[in-house]
Length: 383
Image 1 (cartoon, rainbow, N blue to C red):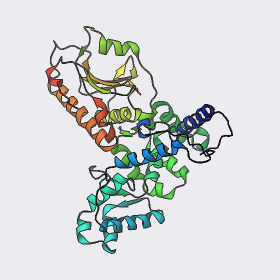
Image 2 (image 1 turned 120 degrees about the horizontal axis):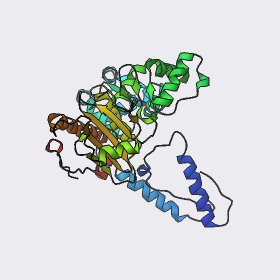
Image 3 (image 1 turned 90 degrees about the horizontal axis):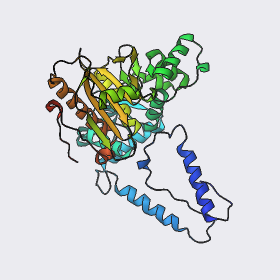
Image 4 (image 1 turned 135 degrees about the vertical axis):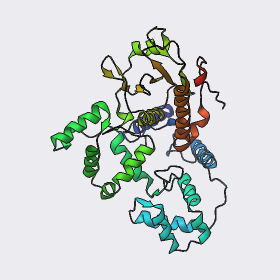
């Protein structure tokens, strides 16, 4: 909150909005989905009686509360006992618990049997409230309860945002690994350990494996042979001629399928969604396709080898993600058949899971369209 000693109302408003822009440009807030900001209000504390903007702010708060998933829903009184125990863990600086560890603790408290039997449902409720993080639908993460949501978010940021400068690292090996992640988006296990060590958080070191598993499961990093790829750290570089040849051209040396498209109503594809799609594809097909001796692995353009003679190109431009299969050695117009169907189904399930797990409010803001030119890749999407 700021106080402005200004006379002109318009000038006050401009200064306030400039401060808000500066706040949104803070490193920890860059990349935030602006659709989560439901209103912007310039409240003047020099009013003698009442600022009408304050009433608008109150209305916005109430409307924001109404769209919460648990608004006006009754919850069992016993669930408050679970909430109380979780709050005690928070006060004790506990960051992560295994669900069975929590269950055994609750058995010694004032929690009845029926609540313990429905513990998954109880934890899902507190997850929706933002009180904890609990991914019941994830095979790898369903056994963990993240007591402190901000802690795990900060842990993720240590590895998927621009890492600290070389000067912090004493080991030449680690400095070389810093260059690898900074220039190519390749994260090594040793570098991850060093980042966590330098953070000084003992809990981060203890729960390192849990944090890394979470990053993988949430498609924030992709597992390769000896490293992870961090899609958010890949360089942006577009091979215009390559994209034109493969997506728009009709070269006889390239056999291609139709493009399978994901289109957003926003002006641009949100980077977090693009990064998750790329990570999921890299984890599925880890062999990167080369063009003129260079691996095609950039933020916005990725080529992966799906089979020995079939490759997948992912390309992002403006508000569209496009996926297309291609061969550099035509086979008499042979259909992409089962390969195309397999890729299409994987992308469909992958995108559906990303939206369900991490971006549920985006579900009504996109649609998929495609031109039909290969029956194996045909799909109809409805809103």
